Length: 149
Image (cartoon, rainbow, N blue to C red; front, side, top):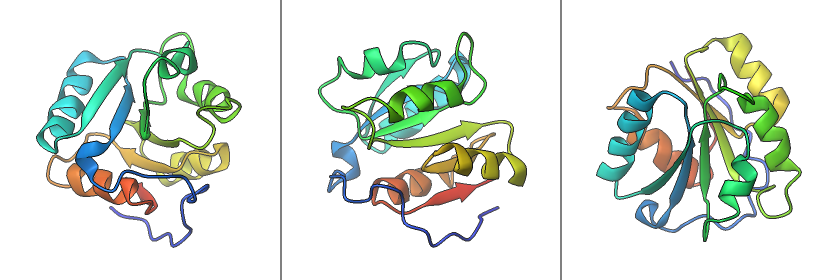
């Protein structure tokens, strides 16, 4: 279910990859099966992804990568949840403008509003739809807002 939103993604002046297959996506997901699904869908699109299992030290890890174009952040994570990790990302000089999209099974309008208020750039509800996911990622990488249950 798509939610209409014409507000451009915050910080849309950032450089986004011209082709999705040039993108590097950091997936922050503690469930191995969910990560494998996301990695396969991104791989099918030609997108390279990295993986972190919790929000804890996500900034430190991302800083070791040559580039990060998008962070797909689960909300419910061990040690530090997605909201705590987002606060650290937004205060990081190197990552503050990186697109961060909440990807969570806690999918409701209330959670979308909470994610918007916290400063996420988008929201994709689980379970992920393999037919919709590639288009959602392409739209996000073009700088279009995606707030979908």
